[in-house]
Amino acid sequence: KAGVTQTPRYLIKTRGQQVTLSCSPISGHRSVSWYQQTPGQGLQFLFEYFSETQRNKGNFPGRFSGRQFSNSRSEMNVSTLELGDSALYLCASSRGLAASTSYNEQFFGPGTRLTVL
Amino acid sequence: AQSVSQHNHHVILSEAASLELGCNYSYGGTVNLFWYVQYPGQHLQLLLKYFSGDPLVKGIKGFEAEFIKSKFSFNLRKPSVQWSDTAEYFCVVNTDKLIFGTGTRLQVFP
Image (cartoon, rainbow over all chains, first blue to last red; front, side, top):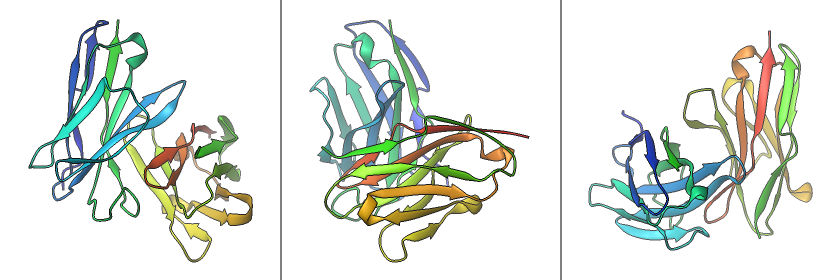
């Protein structure tokens, strides 16, 4: 079974631009979660989508948004990029059978390394 | 606010040494606890998990962790590490979302 895939793997943008990252979950998984990993803040939860609806979100500004398609693929968008948005963005998928991320093992993708200049 | 503390940021050991990585969390309700591992150049993967029952849980590759509710701790242990255990280890608490600790970088020298 193929794992979680993320595209692109690397991205360089400049301040003020916007960016869209893509995540394809494991086949059969309906939940996709996004995380930001930085050296200073570690791994932080951004949001979770289940059946095309945002089911949970972390404490990030509205510049960070996402969506999920009917085939469970998900995209994450960051508008008006800031230098501090430079990070590794990880996507994780799970069956999502419970009402939240509880009790669902999450499988992580390789991440997208975003650099903002 | 819910948080996870990993006390050791960088641990260096020789092969065959014993390992214990500390993890404490702050959350008053029911939690699910995990340890995830990230080997160099690889994805994050689940090492072991605790949901309920026996507080001593065993994971892959000889790792185990003990949940001590009174201490809000979930320490990771391995009696004898190998060079291939070199990786970053994350303690994770699951309330309604995953909350990661800052990670512990383990280097094992042959």
